[in-house]
Length: 326
Image (cartoon, rainbow, N blue to C red; front, side):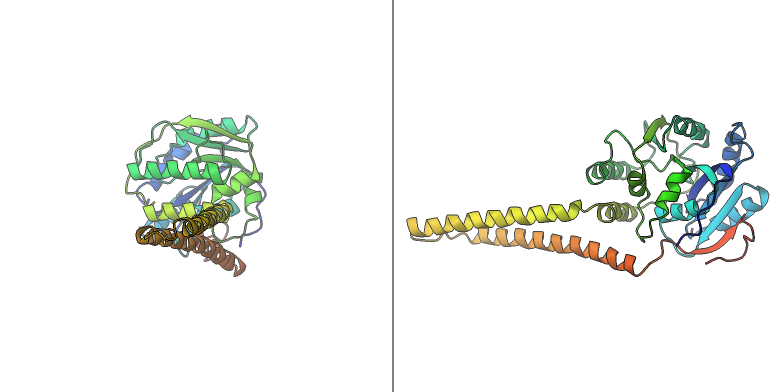
């Protein structure tokens, strides 16, 4: 699945998934260079690893051009759209930095805040998340993010005061640890939380998107939630078991009540409406339980069948980079 883990030879790697950002990438590279060239311990020892997640625009062509203009820009083109978290795993597998920063490709995460993340990492943390005082996202996306954050606290035992942001700084050894995961359904934050609990957080500003529209849809948000719920926790199975026991107990109590009624008032209640409601509720719970089990079994099947997390189509900026790679 992953190439051999690379020994860190640089001070810093930026791993950035790319989708629909052809107009943003030149400005992003310029701002990253302007920021990192001011850091004495990073200057001349950093790289940007763009992972083009089969973007529908000309993003890959822009990445190829930038890699020829700047020796610190590298690119990976995925043959098929794999999703942001799978794309990150591809970038981690090719990153050569002792520290790795992940960020979005739309400049809503400011490169000028990277030194803050690195400074917090140097305080002894393995992982540092950026949190935002005010987010520049659509209302549904903010609400979905809050729901995802609450569910992560419940399912993954995440500290409630920590926001799981895609703008993060990670030590390379933590990335090497999570690259051992071979399952096709990747949730990077879930993997990180299983690798370390030595986590820091800093507040930074969230900016307007530089250009274009976000490629993160409601459907992708739901898919990410399912990955978290079914790939890194058995809590949904336990909840369905508890629901089954609760309704089974309720059924026994009602049966006992009906027996008592039969021998005391010698007639059964009409109760057609209540009977139908009970059947519908129990039927819904049973279908929910079957759906949860099916989700788990489907993921187990695809994992056993070794479905790849991603497939690399081409590289740019690496040694022998312009030749397609599998």
